[in-house]
Length: 210
Picture 1 (spheres, rainbow, N blue to C red):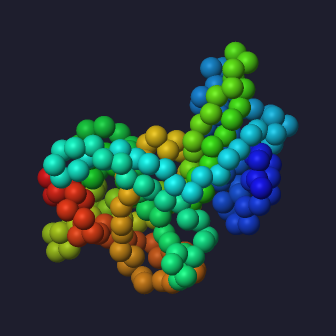
Picture 2: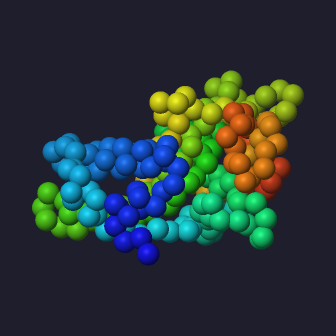
């Protein structure tokens, strides 16, 4: 059982993911630090950690009521005896009308979901629930494609291809359609563009077309 950050890193098989988790977590802790300083390797590796496989997110229903939505994080596990899932979520970026029809949110492909526990400058223990995800960039500034009547996405540049972020920014589950149909066993590695599937549920349709 994985109980600390060092074991989590050592058990992450994908080298790119391992580096992104390490650097991204360091940057997150630095951002949260009052002195804006990096934590050294020894306390980082010993940091208590717990892996999660899903979180409940409050979303607004078509009736305007707030309901709980389970955003699962299946990782490399198979789904219903088939290929593994691609767990896409809405991630809040900035408030307001940025990104056109996406209303300040972007679809990210979520990877590991984990909680860290560390001691802050005051000696108190604090916990943060984090996730690693593959960001996307909305084409046409996030405005609807006139032919597809949806929004097209492309993969982020290599420099920001994987991001560690707080799960508090997750605004719900969503679904995309890959430009190149690939097996979930190999993931979306060959695919670099997606279309937001606004037909998967009425709430997504109404939100994008509002």
